Image (cartoon, rainbow, N blue to C red; front, side, top):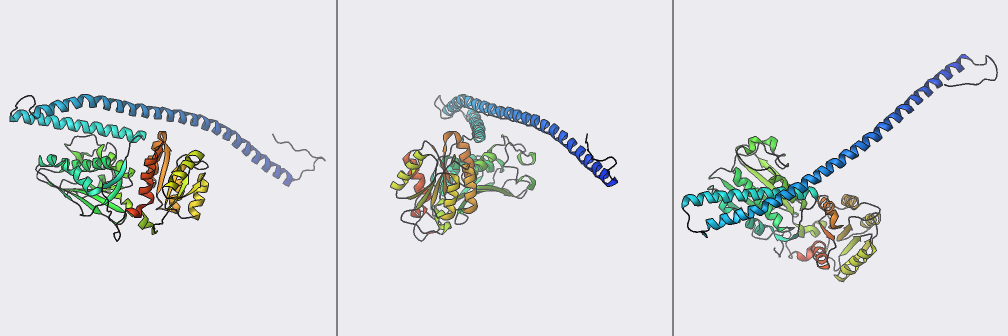
Amino acid sequence: SLMVDRIQAHSLTQDDLELMMTVAHQVAIALDNASAYEQIEGLNVGLEAKVRERTAELEQADRLRSQFLSHVSHELKTPLTSIKGFLQNLLDGLTGPINEKQHRYLSRMLDNSNRLIRMIEDLLDRTRIQSGRLDLVPGEIDLGHCVADAVEQLRLLAHAKLQTLEVVAPPAPLVVWADRDRLIQIVMNLVQNAVKFTPEGGSILVTVRQENQALAGVSVLDTGPGIPPEFLDQIFDPFFRAKQVRSGIKGLGLGLSIVRTLVELQGGTIAARSEPGRGAELVFTIPLLPTIAMLRGIVSPETPRILIAEDDPDIRQLLQDRLGGMGYRVRSAVDGVRALEAVQAETFEGMILDMGISSMDGLDVLRQIRKLDQQLPIVMVTASGAKDLAVRAIGMGAQAYMLKPFDTDELQRVADYWFRPLERLPSGSAGESSTSG
């Protein structure tokens, strides 16, 4: 209730009464709103608690599912290894001669064993990706040689379907910084996909080319039935299997999803182009990393300047001493704010950024730096337990990462590759490297 005192009787005018009625009405509304707000706050607290509880349950279920798939996959690989080995022994005649029909049956059994092993590997890779435990071991790779090696392993598979399988690559090496095994896995998966969907007597062309000063590209073109336009963006989704595309084709639908992840983790992109009835072309790109300095328009200094963003004084001192001994000029920042200030005020040929740096999250620092400088080579440093964050950083524009504890050889290899790129470029050549992997 709202009470009003007055000094004299009958001293309130009609205007006073109307004012008080208005105030009383507003106070009543405010009280009702306050009561409703308290009720809503109580509901929000309850809902937030339920959301947190449900989120924790889902995360736990996801972890258990990943652990289960990983365990089952590992357990299946052991007997499959024996099955595959004994089948190969039979086909090689180690147990005595076999006739043509037996050879044909055993070959089919071996082919299906290999297919099952590939599906298990896809499941394992899928769980590694989800848990952030997918290992990449990058190095200098001649892209043309690597692609040729991958295709050669599938030549018999194409020959069995009377298909023509051709590789075209430039004579000069296209050197990239990538995980060779994973790069071979990418190419083999794309070529296997092409062989699978191309009819007997068809052709598959694998082309390695330089897209521009920064990128190399690999194209896999087939003469299969093609992909309907509405599925071009979906074929890289996990478990996607369109009936119109995969009619009669066996598989889990994981291969292209894993390929996309492997490409993106190494700084590339992948896309599909197709017209129904006229085949399909899957193209992925990967950075030609030796040209980074040229794109930045810098001149190779005698002592490249490196920024170390690390809040741990011991590790910061270790990096300063070691990089200084390698011939680098080193500037240090003790937190994320000072690192951003240094990048804005000075020019560096490289940066080592700790994922757990203070004052700002390492990913936030990376994101802000990429708004200022798209080309500065950045190497992330993180604890092994946070490798999933480092993998995310690669997708956000970092060039590489090192896991603690790292050794000095790894530090020198990574620093010299990323922070001295011009030293690996032959004079007078914009897009070629004199080294090959």
